[in-house]
Amino acid sequence: MAGSWSGVLQTLQAVDTEFTADSVEWCPVEGCQHLMACGTYQLRTPEDQPALDVSEPQVRLGRLYLYSFNEDNTANPLVEVHRRDSPAILDMKWCHIPVSGHILLGLADASGSVELLRLIEHEKNSYTLQPMSSLTLEERGLSLSLDWSTGKPGRAKDQPLKIISSDSKGQLHLLMVNEGAAELQLMASWPAHHFEAWIAAFDYWHTELVYSGGDDCLLRGWDTRILGTPVFTSKRHSMGVCSIQTNPHQEHILATGSYDEHVLLWDTRNIKQPLADVPVQGGVWRLKWHPVYHHLLLAACMYNGFKILNCQKAIEEKQDVTVSIAHEMPNSLVYGADWSWLLCHSTKPTSTCSFDQNEMGTRAADRPSLKVAEEPPVPFHEQVVDHYMDGPANAPSRAELEASLLSITEDMKSSSQLHSSSKICDLSLFSGGGSFDNSLLATCSFYNHVLHLWKWKTKQA
Image 1: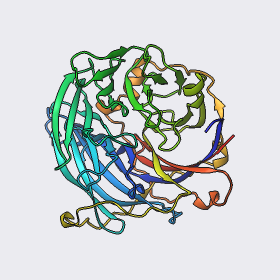
Image 2: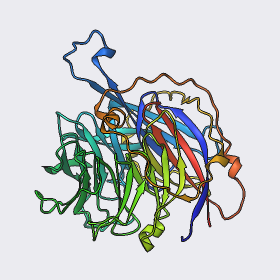
Image 3: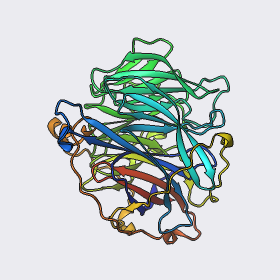
């Protein structure tokens, strides 16, 4: 798909997640692509509980939400179908393939563990996520990220199923998943960074290779067959590296993001110099390649909202990256962002997942009603963007970043409860024919605990 992309961004729904939301993931497995998980994080300090001994450590609470998307419900297309309390959730990923007939969600949490949950369907649009396996990797730290080795379409039959995880002590952990029982087995752990290892990710095309980024400003590559020495170390980022993703459509293409407010594109065959350097005026906590279009990259830019980057000319012609959408979100930190695997013009989702009906477990309790955030949708005409980046913004000081960006390991700002008020755009605004394409995406905001559902209507120029 060559050429520039222009688009119209529309808010479909804003949901109050009560706890601060920092991770959102749409299910990639066919038949369940209407499902989306959202992970949250809340720091409870001794000051919050006066009766507690002040010597007690801080407690990090979390909650996992599961939502179902229904395009026929134009007022509230996201419906909560399950919630589960847990330690604070720092990252999560769905496995792209069923494992022993189960669809699995992996969590990295504040107890230093990686946990696997299986999706159970009880009846039409009634689901729960039930624990299947858990492994504590670092009792004295936080599990900060995880990635499955199955991040792209297609997988060799003899390729083992693996997870890579990183923690707040700077370590990486390689886990094998026993596909017969979906059990986690620790294969190796090793020190990778001097400070927090914010992110770890597989090379989806060569799954013996993994990449990691840390608060020591280093981007590193590792061959899991020969541990101990990194394959490469890049110092190209000037601050902590906190997001990495291999392009699942195109071999050798890697995207990284940092607190230094830059997204870098790499050809992994030549890691000395990036293909492109894109200033985005915000620390880049998550990067997600579009599930269909190989050149579109979604960036969660913390205090500067989110951006959709068109990387095609940078990848194919070594030209600049263009910005298709730049959406600011004042008074929030956008940590989580993900594309839906559903295209809005496709057929309605039907449940074709494989479930063990003999192990349905306890029925979910009565579903709590969704709190709708009091946040009017942005006028869609203000979001028509198709331009080149002008250049980097003035970089904040390290002290400012520590106060605002490194909040996962620092005290949380108190945030007032949002009032329940439904102010939703009508999906019918974009009905009709034409050569437009529609993508769904979701973002979640840290301090104001809001999960946003967006629709991006695009037209290629």
